[in-house]
Length: 173
Image (cartoon, rainbow, N blue to C red; front, top):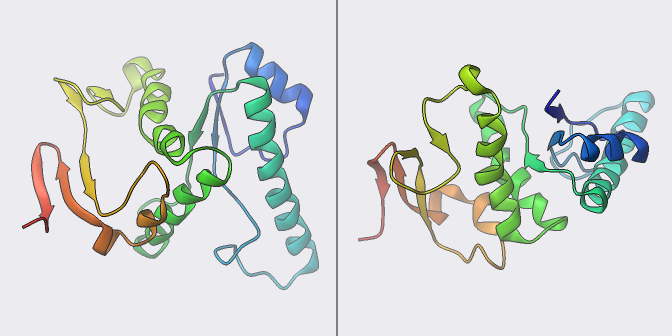
């Protein structure tokens, strides 16, 4: 096994085993905030709170034991949920620097996907900017070294999008 998805309820012994065996942790920042699912059932509310507390603990344990972490998400093929994607990624800056958070979603995620070998979903190198790599580039209105708030307003913050070598958005002029 090379990757654990979610795992917010992992205990320290499990995280230590993950670190000792080079297991990656693909984790979403499930937090008790405005984007949480709304529940009325007290059992669901309690489980949600447990996951939120576990998220904070998981990032602390991953850092303590040196587990490779990537930004994970379950939001696929859902335009409404996709709008939350940037906010979820921005939340990683609570646990690490903004640039490190971006790396977890790009370079680190590319390194994890490369472990798929022949089953890799993309026929090329991901997560790096170099010749023959598969890279999409963004020019933003913001400073990714200090803050990821620009991820929450992609319509206005993403000034240039280069995808697959083609410009798909350009508002720089």
